[in-house]
Length: 392
Image (tube, rainbow, N blue to C red; front, side):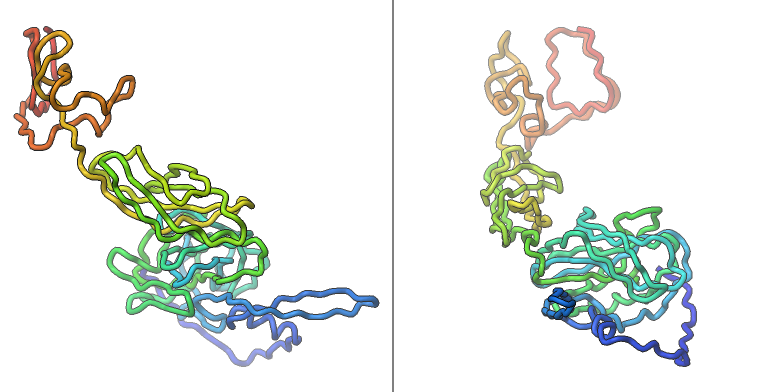
């Protein structure tokens, strides 16, 4: 995305506002690998104590990092994102973005999986006039290691911050997190012009729009969502059957359900089993299987990494010659040789598993319409490019 760069004027003449000890402590919340948890307990006449606990919350950039171009000057409604992954399983707890003074309106932050499914969203509140803005999701989202996700925010009036070509030369890694390098077919710095929240699928040519992810390897939440199942394997057992297996989710609460998805659509709830057989597959078809874990509290993981498999070609063939119910002939009326029809028992409708042209069959092209006026005419191995008019 090419934008006009404006000169940035900074002044060192403004007096610094004196901060309290608490303000100085909290101002570095996301600039350091630890956050401060404040717990106040009233004792007698109002005395209190402060408890501090370290966590592993991190992000891609510190609060001291500033964009090269604070205001892009563009004023259209836009969704801006960055594609990232973690080298360990963990939780995305929220989203940040850098705000210019003219980047106004109501901002929303979102987390998406690699297929564009919305995993969580939050509306920013209590924003400052400019600078880094932070919002936490209502429920942390578990993410799998090595899996690509997109974190984004919606700027309804534009004026977003930008560094052109930021991801073109290299990826950015900070701790467990990596913002991916821009590559052919794998863009980073993504966006979409939209009136509301929408998956940012358009390639920004490696531009950095200064949207950031908040990530934790552990939570103070007593009931975090389970981690995504790992080790998903899909194996074709036949042309119409696929076996799927996986490793159990890591979870603080017992897993009550595993949901199996095929090509992004829920296929089955298998309870606590860690294997499933898909008997509805079609021959010579490629499928992608994913698994989601849900614990006894109703909290679910994100979808696992996908396992791809292609079913083999069907061993059945159509046509053949034999004795039909009322005479001898070829084609669907025959009950001997080729496909006996057992793969499509009535009243099931024929599908790709029991219909189609048998392998190796040579078809004769018929250009235009075919007119049939003789009784008991058999039409076989024809590729008819027009209509069939039967008057027999």
